[in-house]
Amino acid sequence: MKTISFRRYRCAASAAIALGVLTLLPTIRAEDAPRVDALHVAKLAADYLATHGRDAPYVVSIVLEKDALLVGKTSWVVRWSRPLLADGNREVGMRVKLDGSVSYIVEDKSGQKKHAVPLKS
Image (cartoon, rainbow, N blue to C red):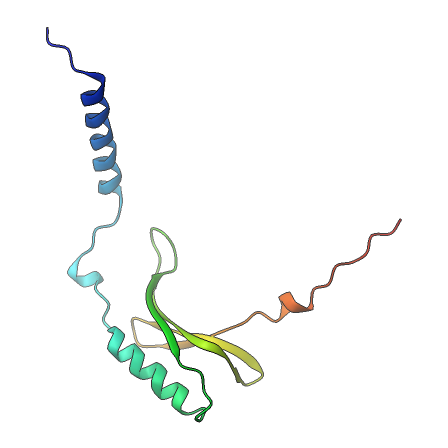
């Protein structure tokens, strides 16, 4: 009877676990590819920022993100170089869904208004 070294056993076990994990992850298919490409998103962002004049911020990043780890919706997230004041909100970027719809990312003002409440003794 042939014995298997512990090192080979551990390597085989690690490979089996990795293979099992990979089969659980969603596979990338052609239909999962973004229908809106980064170039189109960059043009949308540049056109939007151009409406805010010469002092407007610029684009610092464009990232394709998934909302959740396993079953999330994918969208492009664009970040500005500094917050943009628009309609009383401080916009920090925009989100472009793969269907082409656009929403703007604003800072949460409620966090700034919270103050520590002194404890009564």
